[in-house]
View: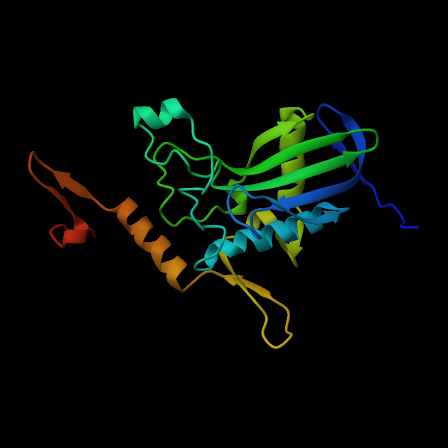
Length: 226
């Protein structure tokens, strides 16, 4: 018989309580809007490490994390939104990225979706990277907002490597192991995704000058920023 190792925590609304286990789902296996059950965990560190691995897939070219996030095949779209034509991506994924947690307390369950919502200026067809520190509670059930945020805080503060918590992890890349070696997670400093993110950041920080007929930017080599 397995020995239970409950997680004892103090939540703002529930108060002091024990968690039996956490069922963890993410989009790393089948892509956007298709959360896949990965494993059942009995501490926040395990959740944080698996979440880190999934986040690092954003650093890999052609990763399912990015696959058709702007258009999910077979996804239902709101007819009035589609007819109005104001939403350029009516079939986009619900969130930029999503993790689902089913938390088994002693006596009942709680459900949390963690991830990041789209903002009005986001273009789902672009390359992007959601860092752990930017994760938020995007949905919850049978948990107060305060309790859900506190659980996210526990996960972000879990140590994923010596001296580093999940919230301190930056942009990374998942590197599969070769010849039986274990996979590793490395800082995202080069490669197609790093280059795409750098180009988007450069465009975002560019200076633009416009008149009635033209829009000029420092990218056109007509302006210089010192």
